[in-house]
Image 1 (cartoon, rainbow, N blue to C red):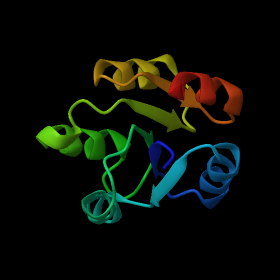
Image 2: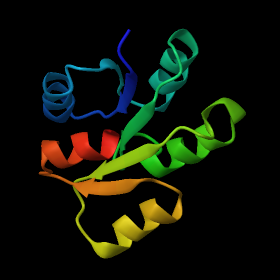
Image 3: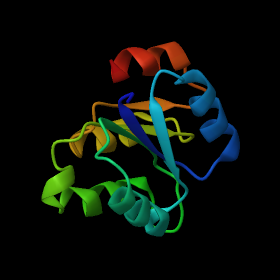
Length: 116
């Protein structure tokens, strides 16, 4: 079985692009916070979680904080993606403990390097 990447994103074009580009991995996709909890319960523990900061209704950082409260997910690396480019957004993501925050449109090869 390939390593599992869990993608939390409600933007179909981004999700489809990531699934096509990350064929060497098992991809599990969720589109929001409720969907995230249910799918994490039913699937293997992911090797990494990629989360959009703009997901509805809570936002990616809130979902991340919620997951960190659960011991099972504390040591999973996170990468945020965001359509809102500014240094404060990136700093906020890194302050939360993320590996990085990539801004759309991002270089898929850069994301793949960060995943490795």
